[in-house]
Each structure stands twice: as C-alpha cells, then as structure tokens.
Image (cartoon, rainbow over all chains, first blue to last red; front, side, top):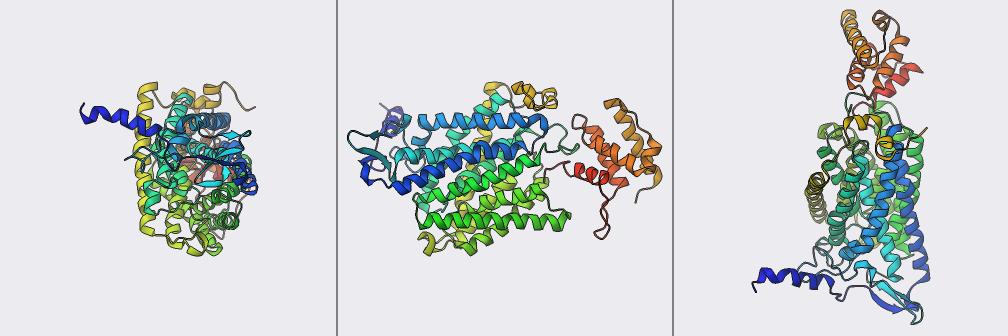
Amino acid sequence: MPIHSRLPAALLAGLFAAPAMSAEQVPVAQVSAGDTAWLLSATALVLLMTLPGLALFYAGMVRKKNILAVMAQTLACAALVTLLWFACGYSLAFEPGPAGLERWIGGLGGAGLDNVLFDKAAGLVSVHPLMPSVPAAVFVLFQLSFAIITPCLIIGAVAERMRFASLLAFLGLWSLFVYVPVAHWVWAPQGWLAQLGALDFAGGTVVHVNAGVAGLVAAWMLGPRVGFGRAALTPANLAYTMTGAGLLWVGWMGFNGGSAGAADGRAGIAVLNTQLGAAAAALSWMAAEWVTRRTPTLLGLCSGAVAGLVAITPACGFVTPASAVFIGLVAGAACYWGATGLKRWLRADDSLDVFGVHGVGGIVGALLTGLLADPRVGGVSGSLGTQLVAVLATAAFSAVMTAGILLLVYLLLGGLRVAPAREHEGLDLSQHGEQVA
Amino acid sequence: MSSDSEKLAVAAHLHVVMRRKMGRVTDVEWLVRNADYAREIIRLACQQDEHPEVAEWGARLGAMLFPKAPPSAPAPVTTSAKAVAALRYVGGLR
C-alpha cells in the first residue's frame, strides 16, 4: 500500500488516541473548592458578556429595524457553538493531536466529551492538565464561553445585511476551522505559538485579533450596506449599547481573572489590571474624540472601555498595574483611530467597527504585552518579535480561512446577503418575522 | 463659502429627489432663506437610508448651509444639533 493511502487511517488513529496530556481522572479531594468556585463564577461572567452583554451592545448600534436580528444571531451562534464544542471543538483545541500534527491541531480523543467524567461512587473526577485544580467539566465550560463569544463578535461586522442561514453556516464553520486551531496554537501546551513563547493570557490574539480580522474580511466580501456613505445609518438606541458595554466590562473580570485558572494572586492582579485598562482607555478615547470632534460621546466612552478591555486581555496576567494604565491609554486612542481614520482608509463597511475596536485593540495589546511583560508578575519576559509573529500568523490564517469559508457558504447556500428590498425592510421582519414596536 | 446661486442649485436638486423618491414637496426658496426650515428638511433627508440619493443631497446642502462653526462660536441648539448628529452617522458610526 502506498504511503499516501495509509495516511487517512493513520491520521484517524492519531486523532482518536489519548496521549499523556489529555484529561485524566484524579481523586475528588485533589480538586480545589476555591478554584472551582471561582472558575464557575468566571464562566458565568463570561457567558453574561455574550448573553446578553454583546447582544445589547450590538443591538443599540444597529437601526431599529435590525435590533431583533442581531440579538437572534448572537443567541443562535451561542447555541450552535456550544454543541460544536461538545461534539469536537473542545477536543480539537485542547486534547493532544496526532503525531506530527500536534503543534497545529488537537485530536478527537475527547470528542463528545467522553473523557470528561465525574464518578461519585469511585470518588474520581476528570481534570485537564492546564487547570489541574478544577474539574475538567469546569475547564471545558470556561473555554466554551470563550469559543462562544469569539464568532459572536464577528456578527457586528456583517450586521444589517447578511442572511441568517448563511451567517449561521459561516459562524459554525469558522468556529471549527479558525477559532479551534488558533486556540490550540496559542493555549495548548503543544501548540506552535505556545512553544514559540507567544504570550496571550486571556485571548488578545486568539479571540480579538482573530475575530477582528475575520470581521474585516467578511465586511469586505459582503460589500457595504445599502446607503452606506450616503445616508445616515443612525443607531437605534445607544442606551442599549451602554447597558451592553457595562455587562461586557463586568463580565470581563471573569474573562481575564478566570484565565489565571485559580483563585489566587495572579487572578487578583489580572482583574485589577482589567479595571485599570478599561478606565484608562475610556478616558483616552473620550479625550481623542473631544479634541478632534469637540464632542465627547456616550458611544465613544463605551467603545473606549471595550477597547481597553480588549487590549489588556493578553497582558493582564503578565504586567504591572502601571503598565495596564499605559496599555489602556494607548489602546483608547489607537482604537479611536481604528474606528474612524483607518476605517475610512480601509473602505470596508465594518458595520459596528469590529476590526477598529477588537482587531486594533488586540494587536496593540499583544504587541505591548511583548514590551511590558514583567517576570515578577507572570514569571516570564515578553518578546516583541514573538508577539508580532503570533499576531501576523493569526491575522493571515484568519483572513484566508474566513474568505474561504465565506466562499464555500456562498456556493453551498447560493448567497450571503439578503436582497436589497429585504435589507430596506429590515432583517427583523425579513429574516425573523418580528419587529420592535 | 458657497454663493446663493450654488445653494439654490443644490436645494433644487434636493427638492427634486425628495419629490421623486418620497413624494415630498419642499420650498426651494425657503430652504435657502430660513435656517430652521432647512435644518428640519436636511435632518429628514439624512434619515432616508432607503433613498441614499436623498440623503446624499441632504448632506451636501447641510454642509453648504451650515459649515462647521469655529471652536469659539457658541453651539446652536435643538434642530441644528440634531442635523449635525444625523450627519455624523453618514459613512461611520463613531
């Protein structure tokens, strides 16, 4: 048998194998009650960021006729990714991969979460090596909450014009073929970026650069909304956006603090840095807007806070509080430019500025982590070069894969956009048969 | 600074597209003479995302009649602020 015809069988055998770094069973007493309680709380906080935080954040920025559509898209995406994570997403991200491919993708040894067990009679519980003091079930759930919010972020870039079925197909495929591999590269111990020494405490690269670039590519491929650049596409209700931003801010404490994997001092510094980064960026964006446009807006304050949260995400467990303030100040001004000047230059109708806020914020945070990481906080020094490699690799992979997946969905479902008449009518009515009074 | 004839020409264009696209009749002379009337019509035009051409001419007339005030000038309130707020969402959110 020629070697190439043996490859699929060998690959499958490797994918389903369960080598040393997969989840293992330990006595229940080995699990820390404090760490478990904190990770459960952090998971709930991160889920709150998406449902309803991100849904409200986005709903306030679209026109009234698209409020319900963007909320439906967020909810459906969360449910879809949950089942994909259960089926194989978690396993491909965090279980060891087949020999020769373990640096690029995980295996299917944990597909269907078969190896996530709690045996009350025997007093055994599964734990994952990355968070050995909490049950593997909690680790799976915590990581799921990240897997959920990442594709949901992309919804903002394609808002107000994408067909619901095409969007769901795209987000499902994107979750499996883009988020999962990048999460493996950066967070799995065998991942090539992890082995290179790339630092990403809570997802600056995996979540924000990844989603930001995907949003930009998707916005460019879909084309602008009808009337973009000529008519005022006035946001429906920025009070929703403020409510969503508040939920994102609070939930981000779990996003970053939970990434410490324990209820310890590092979680504490990560949460403190999160608050400082968000506050500094909110004021930095406000100042930039005030100087250039003479009007400090609520949307600017909300956007600045989110930009700061994005930028501090990769850094929060590696830097000092003073560095967190600096990162926030830089991110606020940089993301303001990203959502205004850069947006005009890129000429893509990224409806809700996913790239301007998440892409630019993620890049700023990742690079500054390389410059400012303090060994006293995280035990490691950063490298600007390594961080740049991680950002460029993630951005290039995300861009190419996003374009490919959109093309595939276009071919399979016969289109990506709703018809112009449906777009005028609004996606609430045309896609969901509902409307806001 | 635009001349009155230029303002009238743009106001006439806006008048025509609003009548054609929306069935709304405006007073071209009054658009150039009365600031409050102009602001209200421009605000209305800029909200027409179903008719980009209307919004485009509305924004053009707005820029012509109400160029940005220098920093020291006191900001006019109500309708002019609304027109400016509507204009900020043309081509961007932030």
